[in-house]
Image 1 (cartoon, rainbow, N blue to C red):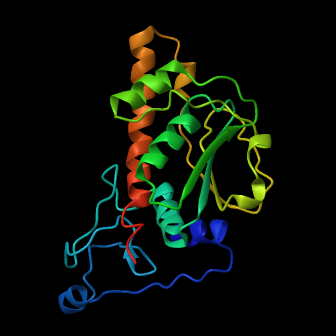
Image 2 (spheres, rainbow, N blue to C red):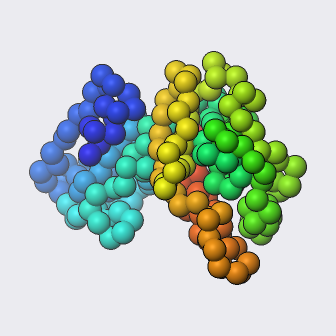
Image 3 (cartoon, rainbow, N blue to C red):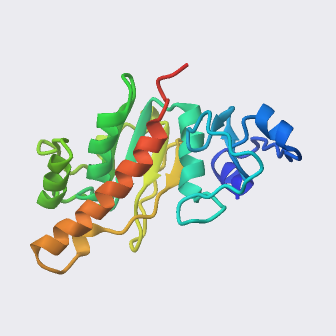
Length: 217
């Protein structure tokens, strides 16, 4: 899977496989369990000093294979783009929450933006659930592509699931994090807020991993 993700995002970039055969070698390499993935020498989850020997490694979902988004996040962290753009269709919920969370986590000098192919208005539920996490996006506006200077964008993360994702025409690195649109929840207000909180929490988990150790040399 690692080669698949690397070839899609960074064509031509090499991937080296190392077989760890003994406990001594595992300890020397500070092996965190099989399989472990390192990007530029940094563990995919940013873990350090948690030696596991020859044990099998368990990732989210209690599986031995990391999800693609985790590999993508590690690649992006290694590249350290200066401008990250989040995209969805309406720029009203997922991409707005992603922008707000990423701005709260990104180190100085990293620009974060969001936009949509058919911008509308920022959902009040998005504002409310981020406020619960101490993040204020009440001043955000829904924006179209024309508000973004494509030449400045280094990485694009699309967040569409059911819809057709917008196509960004710049030369930026492209990632796709498929997340459900909480704005289509048809229940009462509490069920709508629950849907927004679920997406907020998933975005927070992924973005915390993305920016983990980013400011370190």
